[in-house]
Structures are given as C-alpha cells and as structure tokens.
Length: 138
Image (cartoon, rainbow, N blue to C red; front, side, top):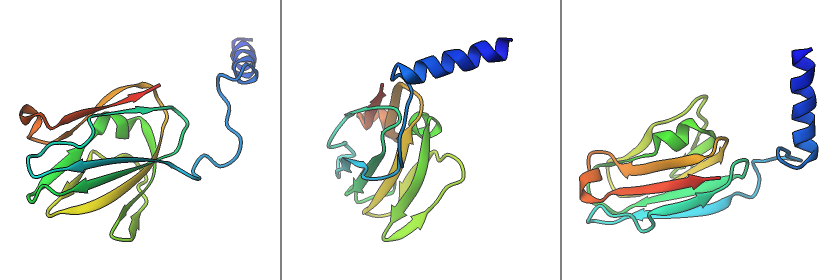
C-alpha cells in the first residue's frame, strides 16, 4: 500500500511538470566557460545552472603553473558524461574531484546536474588568494 502511494505521488509530480524529460538529455550542451589567469583568478566566479540540463564546462588555464581546478560538490551531484582533453575523451564511471593542469591548457567537462544546491569551485590550495567560485544549481 505504501509503495502504491509513493508511485501515485511520483506520477502526479511528473504530470504536473515537476519531473520530466523527453528525449536525450546529453545533446546540445549549454556552454559555460571559465579561464584561470596568471594571478590565479577566475574570469567568472558564479554560474547559474538547472538540474536536468546538459552543460559543457570549458576550463582554460593560463596560470603558467601547476594548478588543480576542483568542484567536488558539483561533481558528486552531477552525471558526468565525458571529459575531453586535447581531443582525447575520458568517460568516467563515477565522479571526479577535479582536473589538474601541469601546464597551460584547456579541458571540457560535459555533465548534467542532478541535485540542486550551491557548490563551490576553487583552485586547490589557493582558496585564500580568492581562487573561489560557485555553481548555483536550481
């Protein structure tokens, strides 16, 4: 009986438009871009995202040094389709903590946020220098 009530509630939510998806979620991603400069600052510090929407995050490091871009909260609460580095695709079976740049370069992370919340991104070890940003997922 309890299971039936949950199923009826779930179906009602879907009909009301609260939870629905038709077709392939992983097509035509919305582009997001953030660059890291030599002062270890981000070109953009906040992104507004929606659950269930497909995104392509391009991280362009021009730091001139070894830095690690981390967003563990977002990456734990998103389905990560692929990571592309210099034309090589990586298809993770689970989450990631971050992407480390040993030199200047560009990486694309394709993902779908699955849980709302405010999730920080940072340059690991450089947060005190202002290397922080936020993904706001609704």
